Length: 72
Image (cartoon, rainbow, N blue to C red):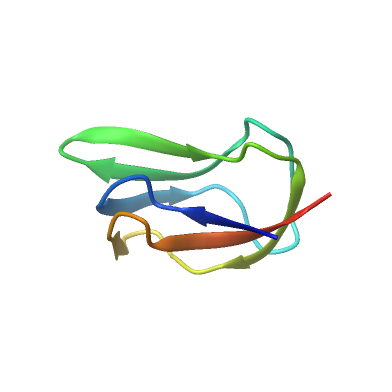
């Protein structure tokens, strides 16, 4: 299992995956918005989305868990 965390504080602008989605290394999972910049959150491993903890519009702190990825 891999815990995908927020690289910085910001608003969740887009959630591009849902639970049970299969994702590939390098794929963007979530886009955060902070200081008028878009920050893509990508996975480094192939896997399956187990649990998504955030919704669009949520505010997250740096290092907050965004989702859990089960590695394939």
